[in-house]
Length: 229
Image 1 (cartoon, helix red, strand yellow):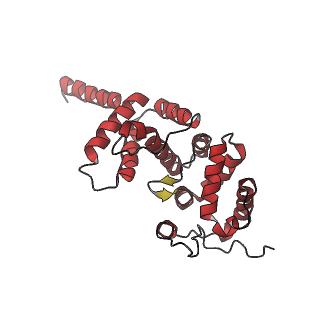
Image 2 (cartoon, helix red, strand yellow; image 1 turned 90 degrees about the horizontal axis):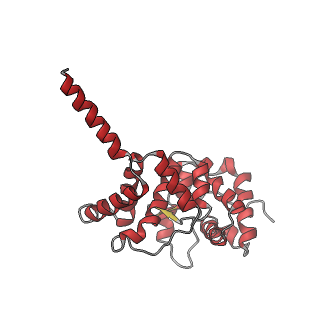
Image 3 (tube, one colour; image 1 turned 45 degrees about the vertical axis):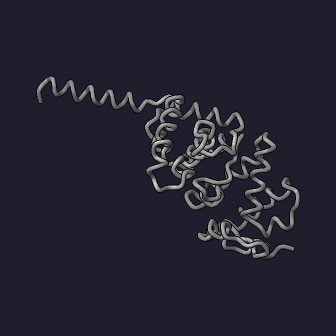
């Protein structure tokens, strides 16, 4: 290989590495531009597409940028309610939270999950209930929900986790009105029946199409009240 060809190869590799070294601000700018361009051409739902694009950007970002964003979102409440299609810049942190949680689940990183959950507990990831997403892809990570409830100082996070537990374990929720009692009870039953758990793969769809008055969907195919007085 000629010397100039070697230089070109080295330069291109260096440029590519520099392009991949995304700062938090650059990630946001790139996401806003990419999402605005892709949502009109891609058939995916906007709430799924916004996370997919961010996952691609996060995969190229240096660890320093990832750590900075995890710590930033772990220290403050993320605003919700903004439509990413209409207000992408205001909806960015919400999308970033989902993408970072999604990434932590894939990597089985409980430290990152608990850091993010300390101030924000999203109810869904790519439109699937978070309790379903975690258990389906990382069963051992399900316990981080209970660990967060025990350690977080955020009253809103505790409330959000209780909402998740009431949705996941409706038969248990009927018996315990107070969140402070319900969540530890769900944790105790989860741990006691861990070997018998089978994920209800139809859970997301059952929640979506649940009719009022119909038996509530359970996250697990198991009788949680068996043997209880």
